[in-house]
Length: 297
Image (cartoon, rainbow, N blue to C red; front, side, top):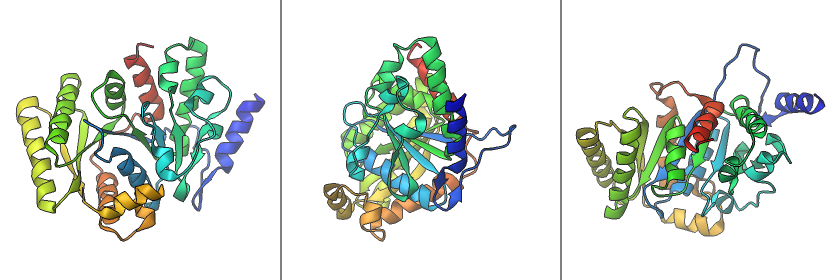
């Protein structure tokens, strides 16, 4: 009981920006919006977009947490220039609580390094699983947005994260292989859920025209052959500031807030969250419950 009371006090006292997070009313059902950021292939800038999107959303007054579940190449900490003290494994094995495993990023963003945590869930007994789900469920009370940074490709792990989330942000570039792999991912999603909300984002485009043409082609083909209607979220034009910022281990929107890429990511954040047509979210608890079912737990 003492641990639980301490946890509730932390929720009440925890601050994000200038706004204090208080406990919701007893009948409140506040749920975070869960978005999986993914790509058909590596090297398209998926993680960079996740980090800078989180910063843009935070500037809009939203409370954001990133879950880094790219098992092979977890890079959120690298782009922030930070070393997480704990990972999801510490939460799973009941060594630390949800507040202790969250790492502080810039501009009030939090992030949680997954490591091999999700794979470890399969081996947990029911009691520990219920406790883990309850811990993750607390993210609904603490945050407005949960960004899931997955690995690239079409593995079963990646597809599970895609299908468990409320919606998907699919990143591609003008490269033919990136476009082909993006469509392959959409095809796999269509076999499971024809109503899945997928937002297309074209990164590293040479021009607005090129970006729009690529997004339109993917949308048209997906609707015609897969009966899945995609949403054109926007684009990020090629910007050398992005490469420079990666070498500095800092997000490009912090290194140069007025650069082209920073302007584009701000527009994307605004479009994503000023659009009120998205379906009602199932929140963090709904996401993790679905994920576990996909893993056969």
